[in-house]
Amino acid sequence: MANSVVLILGVGPRIGASVAAKFTSNGYKIAVASRKGSNTKTSEGYLSLKADFAKPDSIPALFDTVKAEFQTFPSVVIYNAAALTGPPNKDSPFSISAESVASDLNVNTISPYVAAQQAVKGWEMLPNEIKKTFIYTGNIMNVTIVPMSLMMDLGMGKSASAFWIGLADMMYSTQGCRFFYADERHEDGKFKGMALDGAAHGEFYAQLANHKGNVPWHATFVKNKGYVQFK
Ligand SMILES: NC(=O)c1ccc[n+]([C@@H]2O[C@H](COP(=O)([O-])OP(=O)(O)OC[C@H]3O[C@@H](n4cnc5c(N)ncnc54)[C@H](OP(=O)(O)O)[C@@H]3O)[C@@H](O)[C@H]2O)c1
Image 1 (cartoon, helix red, strand yellow):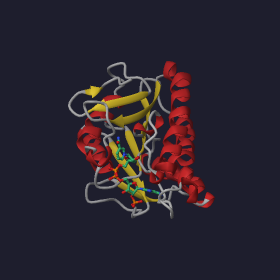
Image 2 (tube, protein in one colour):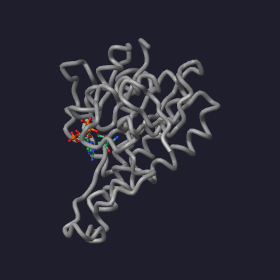
Image 3 (cartoon, helix red, strand yellow):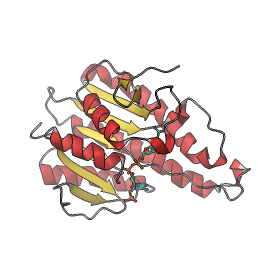
Image 4 (tube, helix red, strand yellow):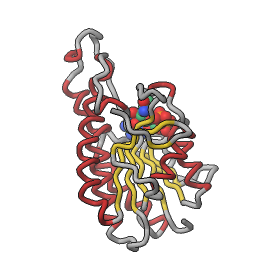
């Protein structure tokens, strides 16, 4: 993996940090992007980029910068950022303004869509033998309604993204390109929520990047088990 690059869009102390550390140990070069990005190298040697994914047009420049820095496009792209807006009236999901819904939808769905467009464009420049992978960090909300107004924007965004990710995987998997909606669950299949495990994401995402284990696009997983199919 000496010349392979992973770009992690949305990086913080939990999933992002663990995934970056795991891919580093597997020999990848790492670029990370978030609003607190520094536009310099981090102490770990990652290329840190600053961007706000509420603005989808901030995405293409990140791919151009990665190409300029590493002389290659990322073979693995991980979209990990998410946004939600607390409703002013917690009993009314429709008390969230349309502007907030649109901005959160940009973070949860439109920016990852633009990232997938850019990923595919870059993959066309990479050798056939390199495995190409797009991983979107999801949650249970593409298949389950969590009955809290607070979850409105998050659930809308995850559901919409799950559709285009599933469609993309069907269209591209025969060409060595995989798209995954990764969703960590408890062993009984319940929503992981605040109990999510960063290291478990690192292990599973590294497996997904190897295209091992016949994991479908809807990649529900459990810590120390990997892919588990839930109803
Ligand atoms: N499976 C589950 O049940 C479950 C449970 C919880 C969360 N999740 C998912 O896990 C992901 C986040 O996990 P985490 O908090 O552990 O990750 P993390 O890597 O610790 O943090 C994600 C980072 O994304 C960045 N980000 C957020 N909004 C952004 C924006 N508008 N533009 C650019 N960067 C942005 C933030 O950094 P900056 O502040 O620097 O921008 C944040 O620190 C989300 O997709 C979430 O939906 C899943």
